[in-house]
Length: 283
Image: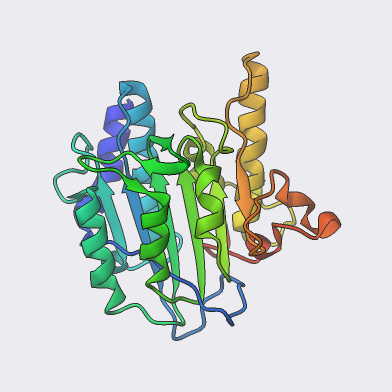
């Protein structure tokens, strides 16, 4: 059943012109996440290496589901969506391999067309490790560090940006990726270095009515984060396991992420910008 559903999800992707984008930020734009009439949304999904077969299937499904969400719900045009995948991915036929060189080259390509009023979504899902205080995203061939990723993103200027790192040790990258009008989500803290399952909950939460806590018919990045966080808690508690992933969020520009962004009104910390960032309309 899983293989049939995955193949069905891939049909949309097979028709997509797959191009890659990495973004930067504008220091003056209001981070509402609502593009004006002249703006566009660009998105990039990078699938890294996952050696465990079951884990790899789950992450491949998350890539397919998020791609479909961006095309069908978020209004991202096919030529503004980039998907780069590992060698064994079921969408390998149309997607470029997620090597460091391919990522860098596609960043340059999009740098020529992306405009300051546009917004950008970057999503990494896969394995990573920390070596000498550097988060290394595990890719086919040479890995890339969070420093390289930050440098590439800083090369593009957009009105707002959402960065999601679903990988072990994700928090390690937050401080260097932080910038004005950026919402950064990490699947776990820097100390948590086991495989993460964040995308299995966050991606569905983007279109799940249960995420819409205020009942306004829209789902913000914060609301999707909150539901995913709750469901992960329930997963570990229900199985009687030690929790090995605690999602974090940074969106106030101080480089220090919060584990409880839903408390932003009380604590005056991270969460306010994410509460105004909507990826789709009425759910």
